[in-house]
Image (cartoon, rainbow, N blue to C red; front, top):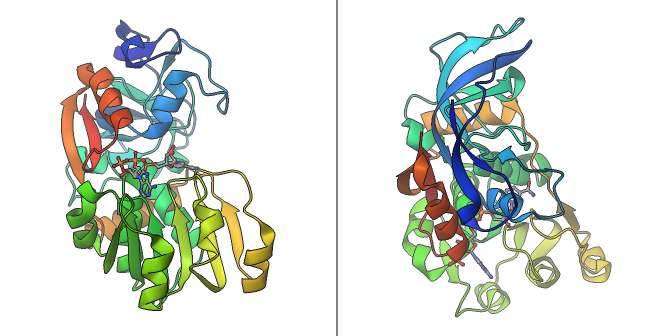
Length: 311
Ligand SMILES: NC(=O)c1ccc[n+]([C@@H]2O[C@H](COP(=O)([O-])OP(=O)(O)OC[C@H]3O[C@@H](n4cnc5c(N)ncnc54)[C@H](OP(=O)(O)O)[C@@H]3O)[C@@H](O)[C@H]2O)c1
């Protein structure tokens, strides 16, 4: 089958089209014909050789799939050939920048019928991260205030999910995304380039029960100033713990979230999409042959939504 592979770590130019052996569905697995995939920052980090990940080239990257089940392995009962499915593949060297992908059925879900394959491919990795940060880690509840830093792939879905859950959502966003962020459900959009988050929150007299950081740097450290008593601060970027003093005074907790690949999370996302409460923002759909261009654009920043690759 056709795949886009890296033989070495490096810039986007390292991708090359190659012929690799088509995978088969082992016991408990589904073999999926990939219709669409998408690019995520982790793909760029892996391609560049980040030492945070245990991956050695040659490798096929790509950690979102929307596609059609081609075959099922022994013991798979939830799916059959012809089913439309979506999921975020295991983070290994057999990713989804390819015509086919095999994955354990336990992390796969049926694609919501209300979304095209291109839209569904923008959801699994970013959506699972947003869902688990807000609901598995932070236990966000209706009526609470969620402060979301960054409204890219993950943050934009977090704004939609938090809004759908009945929370008041304040988002710190790139100015290019102000309108989309408000449409996604943020009642106040703070421009990260020109506004000070603590000033805005304090002058509005608002405190956040949940702070979700998709940006990193000193966000968690600064968040104690805007957090409510018993707040949960969740970062997906910064592994360094913030100073304990200010958080202790609030009985607040800080967590690093590593997204877990789970069929249950995928089914939750599908249900929200079917109910019209979750709709990925797709900035552009490119052919898989333009994977290097998609990486260049994601790394340059300022992309108004997810970049999807049609296989
Ligand atoms: N731990 C995990 O399991 C996990 C899972 C998924 C993602 N991640 C990580 O989470 C991060 C975000 O992922 P993503 O897919 O959402 O990335 P993305 O699509 O590139 O979005 C990042 C967004 O943050 C904005 N931004 C940059 N600096 C900001 C600031 N100071 N304040 C507010 N917004 C700012 C960017 O705007 P501009 O483009 O205008 O700069 C962009 O809209 C990445 O580092 C990714 O690797 C971790």
